[in-house]
Length: 385
Image (cartoon, rainbow, N blue to C red; front, side, top):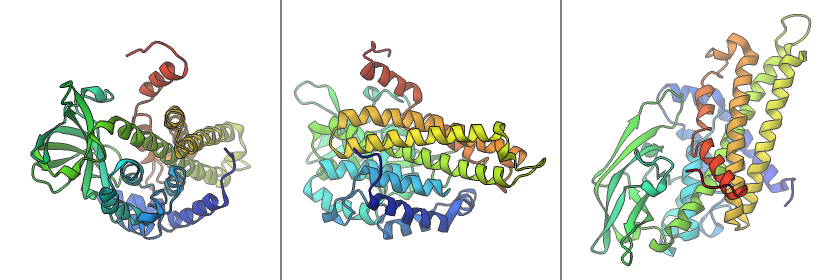
């Protein structure tokens, strides 16, 4: 593994950063506060091939790995216009279908992922399950050659922007009678599918939803891949989710830090810019260190995942997401503090990041559950839950 990115990755970052600056944070905030989405940015990123860098070339993608997609995600966030749905649609859904989907499913969906014309949400969390996926109650029963799906989901991102949702349900094992996970592609216009937007305190151009699945009838090919391999398929999607969440958080932290550095270099209260004072400079330097460390762990996780080492990638992806969540909260808080009262004004656009950065310590998996994982699987301590 090289600690220096390839020339191709560096060029990709530069091109995406240029696109991000074309839109910028003001564009993002304007859309979010108007209760609108960033459709123009998504469409242009898709047309330029940035949303499909990880899709196999034979289906119109760039043929790269999750590390390339994470670089795209990070650079857009660093420009102040991060695309949350990148964490879900091209990362989780496209990856699962590319690895485990049937040939027909790949031909049907991957080209749309590659150019951004297809968006797919991902639904696993339930009101009474939370982090305990063993308590999922969304069930799928056979109905002739197809399926009938019933259940509820909560905190599902970008449903209204998506044509379909990759739903984690459970089917009954014919031999044991026990329920096991299975993945289904559910069109958002299917009969019995209802989505309700959740009011959030965050300023975001991407929204959260509760889903209700009431006798949703699905064809046989709605089941992704093999019914018996669903657990492996699920984790194949969750590792990219954590890697992408890391990239999104690091990019957001970079954006906040850049604003703070610019302000600290130009704001003069006494005889010199406030950035010359160690009480201002040191916390910003420390935030930079923490963001770079999180980014490096994210790159390690991506390299392991792209190499096919899912187990090692899982450990690194969890560590990276934990580190990035802590780092971005610190970076945003310090950026606001550096600006003083200006940090909470609409003019400087940093206050809106406070809630958004805090979310990275909660989703897509809480810092406590990550520490449980590390304690058990990395340190060999007894299971605590």
